[in-house]
Image (cartoon, rainbow, N blue to C red; front, side, top):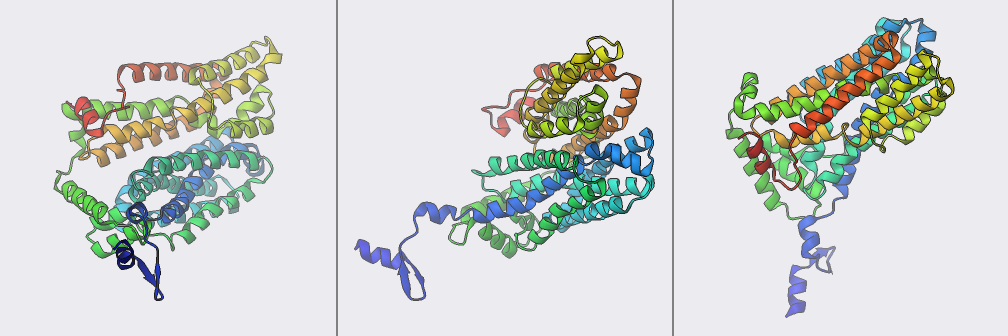
Amino acid sequence: MGIKEDVEDGVEKNGIREPLISDHASNKGHPWMVYFTTLVAVCGSYEFGTCAGYSSPTQDAIRSDLGLSLAEYSLFGSILTFGAMIGAITAGPIADLIGRKGAMRVSSAFCVSGWLVIFFSEGPIPLDIGRLATGYGMGSFSYVVPVFIAEIAPKELRGALTALNQFMICGAVSVSFVIGNVLSWRTLALIGLIPTGVLLLGLFIIPESPRWLAKRGRGKEFEAALQTLRGKDADISQEADEIQDYITSLEQLPKPKLLELFQTRYLRSVTIGIGLMVCQQFGGINGICFYLSSIFELAGFSAFAGTVIYACLQISGTGLVAGCIFTAAAFYLKVHEVGLGAVPALAFIGILVYIGSFSLGMGAVPWVVMSEIFPINIKGLAGSVATLVNWFGAWLCSYTFNFLMSWSSYGTFIVYAAINAVAIVFIIVVVPETKGKSLEELQAAINA
């Protein structure tokens, strides 16, 4: 009887019966397409890091070749984040209108055009236009790539696959810092075309987000995309029903307005989300990251060696405040001509401690907390406001950094240390512990 059941339930191919597929395999299918689709999508994350890491190793060469003043180069470095503000704000509506893949194509188009304009630039105006365009693509990628990954991944893989987004950003910044020391600034701009080229080719192969298709009422395409992602042998019926039910519930929620975010019931979650973004950006990260080479040179440490070792330490270390204090102490000693032999080592240690700490904590945690604390009916609008604050802070920090350093090299890092100290107090007093709580429990406690 067992043999008969096996034959009846077996899979027939070309007239030959194959052994039964286990229930586990039948239900979960083969996730290779999810992995492949994620790898294609995070090419956008890699492009993000390539854009962010471009200005530091090229500062001296661009200023020398094009005769840029400090103010002109500061505008070039910081205008990236202004473009990213526009990209982050508009990416949501674009992704909702033409799909996640469509939004990634638009982002890629801006990056490609921006890199080509930078490559052919002979003056500050086209240079800024190209940087603005790559900034737009970078900001758009910062929204659409994590959303796309979260929407395609099964729940047991979502955390690991989403983490790949941050890893690719850090990796690209590191690579740009290293190769930027041996390649010309125009060649480095051409290198920026590679991730978008891979992404554009891959978008012809990977499926669209099933959740977006379901939201648009494209039922057959939704099921086909979900089946492709889960494997041809997977049973997708339960997951498909859950997605459809969620989409139906979401459509029934009232559409929030901007002023409603500041009602008493939402005020704490909005304060936490925006406050963390302020702490993240005003602590100095983009000023330090964008102009790393000049910091090392000013301190008397090899810019080449410093940026290479920085690249290796992108994901380890502790102490944002300690890093700023070490660096401030180095420049204080230099200004007052005391212990000059210790200046390069102090600055080097301070910057690496700072960057390592940021990569482990403040770089990623605010985005994670933001995804947890906003109720579903305000998540889109509140997330957009918090993202806008984040990119505005990034622009302001990167634009003012060189001017602050001209005012006082050690004073700049004392200011950053003070802001990071305030951030520690803010996190202790205001931000709740999220571990071990469901989203519903957490949001109910915050927004009670």
